[in-house]
Amino acid sequence: MGVATAAGVAFGCDEHMLAESGQQMTTDRTAIRRRLAVRRTAHRPPWGARKAGHRSIVAPLAATIAATVAVGVGVALARAGRDRRESHRDGANERQFALLPGERLADGMVRMALGQVDLALELLGGGGGALDEHAVHEIRKALKRLRALLRLLEEELGAKTYARENAALRKTAARLAGARDAEVMLATLERLIARHPRKLRRRGGVVRLRAQLAAEHERMERHTLGDEATRALVLEELRAFRARVLEWQLRDRDGVRLVEPGLAGVYRQGRRRYRRAAHARRDRVRAMHEWRKRVKDLRYAAEMLQRRDPARRAGLGAPAGSTVRAPGHGAGREAARLRRLAKRADALGEMLGEEHDLALLAELIGAQRRSGKGKRSGRSAALRPRIGRRTRKLLLKLIARRRRRLRKRALHEGERLYAAGPKRFLRGVRAAYASGWQSAS
Image 1 (cartoon, rainbow, N blue to C red):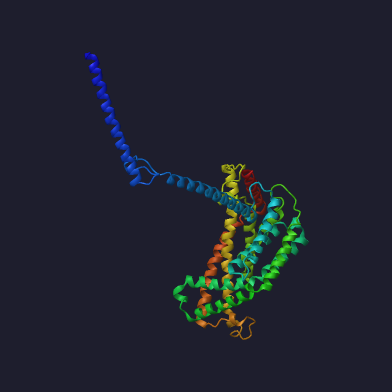
Image 2 (image 1 turned 120 degrees about the vertical axis):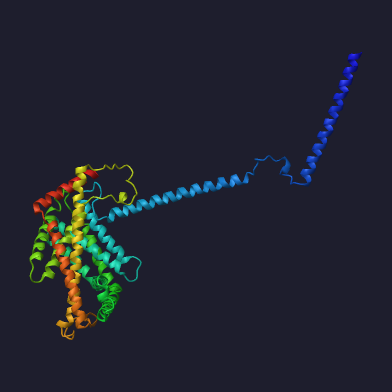
């Protein structure tokens, strides 16, 4: 009886607790529904019920889409950059005035000839309108390289073919000479003024001379660079030359045997002209100028026989699948011989070029006195300088002083450049060429 009563009391307490709990739960649910219905929209939980770390999925989704787009754009840009680098490498390969790694000499000579012609054609036809001075300068340089290349191939091409092609290139270069010569004369005077600013900058005769040279430069620029007929002739001549280059059949000979006779001739002739210039008493200007031509040819010959990788020089890396081996100490030393030769010949050619330009300026300045103040001179009015006797005397004195220094330095460098006999020189070139071939293969 006591146990049953106790159980009933306990059961009644449990029912009472459950009822109170159910009432509380009902009250909580009612409150939640009220908050959902009144305070918040139906699709979002109440702020009080949201966890601290909960975030909307819209932002991560947008970030994912943006990242996917960025990856796609990055891949496209990478492919475009790779295509540009490959195109740049191909263009650099074709235009490079030196042998490519592993390239045979016969193939390289044809490629270099076509590359220089294409460079000149591009400069002549690019963009339309008048040519600028930079374009004319680069075209004339390309023509000089082509003539040096022809000189190396004289025996291979034959005397008749060489004479015809050399004359054609010389004629083409002469069509562009007027504007370039006028620009060089003006630049030579300006360099002289820069060396002696206190003596020359404000001198009336010098100011008038500079104005006359500038006017002549502008006249020749309009006549030559703006002449469509001249451009058309040059384009026609270069296209015809290019077509003939494509017909060359050069023998694939080992080492430098293909160009060895021409290279030996360039070196021997330069050596003779150096001695003639060193001992000239009369017509020294002509002797120095003729020597300069062979120095330029020697420089271009040394550049042509070098081996360079345009991709590595441009930081593009080696082509896929290729193997690049670093040359040994001895091979590197031999290969560097051609670089030193080209560098020395280039520096000597610049000295001789400045000396020649100063000689032409001195001739122009002295023309007034020799021609009776220009009345019987064949020069144009713009090239008959109207300067006083004192100014003319000062200019000629400064020019003569500079020319003496340049001649002294040039003869010293020429003695070093032509110290070896022709046979020893050729042995060194053969060894340097072989070294470059081995390190590139």
